[in-house]
Image 1 (cartoon, rainbow, N blue to C red):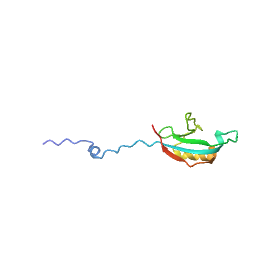
Image 2: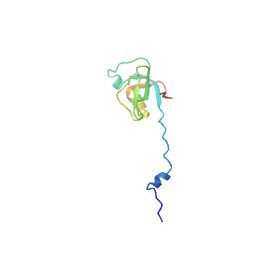
Image 3: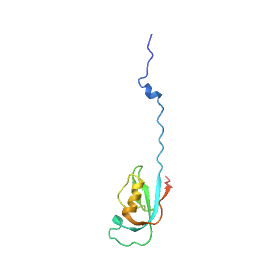
Image 4: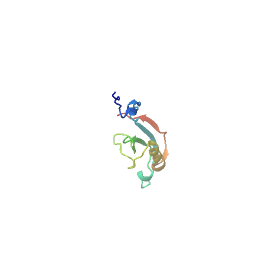
Length: 109
């Protein structure tokens, strides 16, 4: 009698398929600051008014700090691993005061 043919990777076939991973949600964070300092104001000039700031996902794992609007110019050359690090850098290194709370919104593709 012939022995039935066995599939060598039977455990892999019977295992449940890996769940599909969803695309990471893209979020955008906004706040308004005043009193620029550090690398964005090296001369230490007093700048009147409010300055809006965005923490934006440049790629899936890199975040940048930029100005909102059409130019979208970055405030600094640094990139960050997560938005919390970027927001902390803005609050502690780039500006003296935060005038509004951080707001989170979905980024439209």
